[in-house]
Length: 378
Image (cartoon, rainbow, N blue to C red; front, side):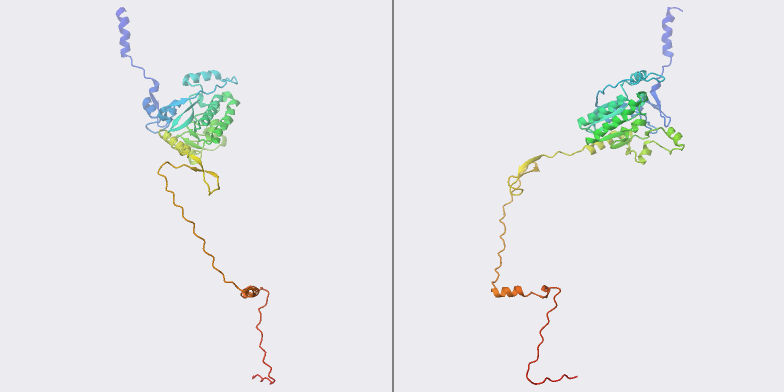
C-alpha cells in the first residue's frame, strides 16, 4: 500500500457504504400493524392514521395540546425522600430512579402546571408513564397535594391526567399511604366549590384507580384506555370465569356508568374547555348600594337595591289625591218603644230555639148567646 491508498480508499468506502437508518423513524401501530412515519405520528398526536388507535402520548406533548397556545408554567414540587426503605430487588431502587431520570429528564412521574384552557385558568397534574410506569410514590403524592393546594389558592379548577400502573412497590407502605393523602387533597378542592375533572388515559390501574382517579366530578376518557384495579388475567384466574369482551376498556366503562364520556384526543381540548366554561361561568357580578326609603318600610329604614345603568331619568308620576271616603247614610231615628219591641220579638222563625215547639194559633170559641148550638150533620 502506498500513500495514495491510505487517503483515497476510506473516502470511496464512505461514499459507497449505505447510511444507517435510525430505528425510531418508523413506528408500528399495535392495533393494525401498519408502519407510520414518526413525524406524521407526532403531528397527529400519536394517533394512528390508519385505524385511529390512540398510542401513549408523552406528557409534555399532552400539556402543549391542552393549554391555550401550548403555553403553561410548571411549578417546582416539594422534594421527597429517596429510597426510604433501602429497597433492592434485581436492581437497587436508587439506580432505577437515576435511570428513569436520565431517560425522561424528569425528577419523578408527575408534572404540575397551570395556565389557561379555553380561556379558563386551570391547574393540570399529568402523569409520565415512561418514568417507572407512572407508579405513585411519595413524590407523586406530593405532586397531587401541591396541585390541589395551587388550585384552591388560584380559585381554579383542577384537572388530573393519570397514566399509571398503580402504587410504587419499592416504597412499600409509604406508597400506599399516598392513596389516602391524595383523596384528602382532592376533597379540599371540592370543599372549595371548584371543579375536579379526571382525564383517564391508558393505562389507569392499581392504587391510582382506587384513590383520586375515580373521585372526579366528571370523568373523561380517551378511546380504548385500560381502566381498572387488577389486571384482566388476574381477575380471570381468581374468579375462574371468562370476562366479557372489552372488559376494563373506556367504552365498556362508559356503558356501565363508570365514565361520563369518551372523547377523541383531537377534541379533548374543546371538550374540557366547554366543561370548564359551564362549571366556572358565574356571570357578571352585580353592584349593590344602600339607599334610604321613608314612608314605606318605616322612617329612616335602610335597604339595598341593585343599581341601574346610567341613562335618562325616569319621569316621576304626579301624586294623585286620595279618594274621598263614601258618606255614611243617615239612619232614621226610632222611638224607644219600637226599639224594645224589635229586640224582643224574633225577626223570623229561624230565630227560635231548635227545641222550642211552634206556637199554635189561638182557637176561637163561639159566642155565648143562650141558644143551643145546632148539631152537626152526619
